[in-house]
Image 1 (spheres, rainbow, N blue to C red):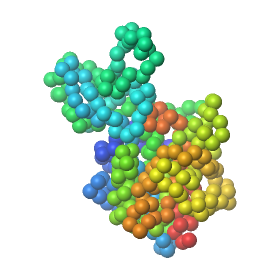
Image 2 (tube, one colour):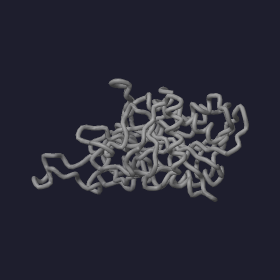
Image 3 (cartoon, one colour):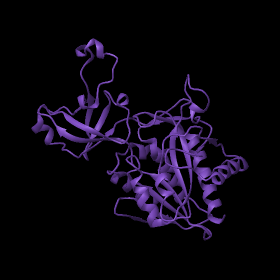
Image 4 (cartoon, rainbow, N blue to C red):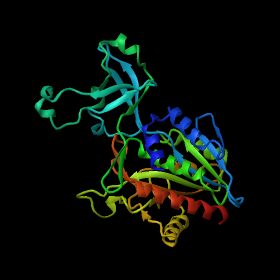
Length: 339
């Protein structure tokens, strides 16, 4: 599964521009399940299990990553841009990016420190003062390669380091996509539906549509979430810890989770010897926020890979947490199929 994560993270795919990610996933699941693509671009799959399920279970992960979109080009050939998803301006200053379908290399530029006023030296510049430099001499040359509406993605190498850690852009949520691909390619006890959803980072839009079409009884959202196990952060503010397995949510900003499902997930993890932990802070949100409100309501559970530095070019997690998340997702899907 590590190779799946690596290859998925290398692909460009901001919200609304997930085509290359979807094509890759299809190449990996073709022949292992039935699948289709809806009008929004969600990839919906059905995997036949060894036995029919009493309840319809959906496993969901989003394909999109945060990034930018080109909004204009200056007379000097510099690109102006807008955020796609929530990104702290401080994480992309001076970063390498790729632009458009051709993957044109660029860098996020800003006024050099030598020219910054003394009273602004410690300030992060406002985003409207930033630009992307692709090395064009002027607007006409830039327009030969890019145009407004082109996607912009972080460029970062996938790295393994330390004691089982990996680092890359887009671990949020290509880790979840890798888990779902692995499950589809494996033997499942019960029939199961899967949604590789689009546009999560700009409002869980894809999952809203796919959940309506699938109409599940239960849904498991396979995600990543903030691991703040860092120096100076104590108690519940750490949210979750890398190396302790998936974080199980009881509440976030979009969903109050069914307490019985939350408790059952931790109980099954203990019974099966799978590492798992509680997400200890009410923060963030994910596709569960849209799925649980679909049609007459869906019982949802979110299992998240603890990940440091989310929504940045250098997300960091432990590979064994991805494996533990996969194992618990598989157990919970079987549980929900017959409960």
